Image (cartoon, rainbow, N blue to C red; front, side):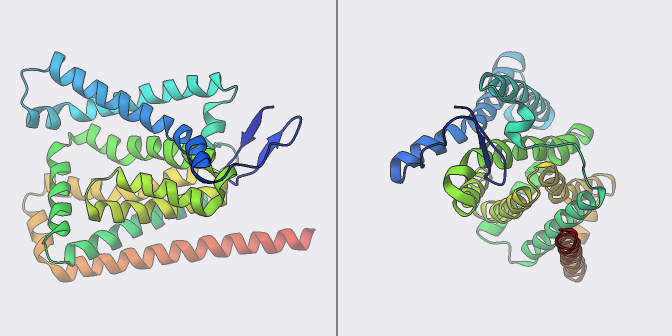
Length: 301
């Protein structure tokens, strides 16, 4: 019997109905570990490429030089190799890459895409501004140091492509696509979304990053489930990552701007307020749009 699932947890089956999902530890083992196979593939491919290239191709580069000059190249290559493997993986399961990832590129809404970007940008600015206003001690200091490390390691064009586009695409395909898609029919929306969001969060390292990524991942997951399509999740993720790329360009091409912004607490607070207003605006317009469609659908029926 062949089953097909989508992000609403719906299923289409030919033949007999599937048996009820097992409970407890056996259920966890049966469904969780297969759901993280794409993640393990991505990590294995990327880490393998980095280790091989750093030891065999560029042994003359120091660790810092490799991170700054070559890391983004092999991270990008890892994304394409992972997608190739996932495509073969889906084909072997008599499915398709787009079906398993719940990525539908037909009948897309430009308005929804724009609202997703605005929400993502606004949320990123609001949360980052709040963190920047907190005392630089403990986890906050670690967060700031990791941000500075990202700036130093990026190449101009490839760094923007990796952080703003490649990373959101591969992470949404893996987490809100393959993983969430596999868990939803068996665990339901609540536990599937929490599990995926937690795994996504712990992939981001320090405590502040983990909290930030969990909130972001949960919101994006809700959007993916509601739209039954990870396209808008990808777009929102791009919005979350976009402000960092813009700021990095400003810091690079306008020396001294980073220090000036950090010292101007009122400007940071204003940017945070603008971000908050933007995400609230996007959220309200999105909900109003969906409510009006539901009302019109009820009227027609």
